[in-house]
Length: 320
Image (cartoon, rainbow, N blue to C red):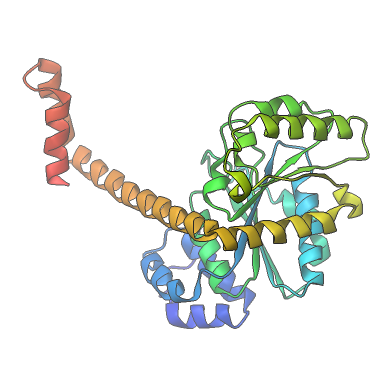
């Protein structure tokens, strides 16, 4: 990206007016950690907090991109403006996203009310990119009613999406061992809605039974105030079952609003983002201290037994 000066107020105004180029530029500033990033976030803050953020996660091959494409079509039928953040694995050669999701979302490529952005994970674990929270704020402030976040194919521990989304959809598929995987720590706990995709395959009903059984074994002692995740079947490639998923999404949003859960989740998300930014600044300052040999000098004292690591750490914190 050019190092030319950035007119942040003009960019934000253009993005709110629906300019895809302005939205793209703002997200690029986020990904590149531009010096203008703080100004961008400050300008966007008054306009954010309106979009329903929906996370879509699951193992590789369950049909996340195809399901996202079908959900976008459903939301567009409802007249909603939709943003999509598709987090791809980073290319080992260029470092960029592989852009595989764009191939499956050509149905919406020319729709001005749909904005699709692929983001590289750049080695960040958890199924997302480190810059995803700020990119979400860009799409939210740009007037998207719904933002779909499709993660990198996740395993048992890469469940960061639960802290980023208002509603988390966990996709599974029959014949992939997902019933067993869901029983392990990680995937089962994060789902607000479970969807068994490719339900025209053998074993779909068994997978649904397994997931329902495992959910019933969980601690659901919250009574009527507790959300009970539905388990449903889809064939996303043929748009089968998508309307039912949309109804479940609306139902979950209504439940969160009624019970104050939406505000709690968004407050927790803001706290996590503040912590992440704070730690990033501290790491950068720690790097400066290491370059100035402060840490190396203290490490030498610890190695000699002259002081202990806790005392050394306190000294570093007092400098920070």
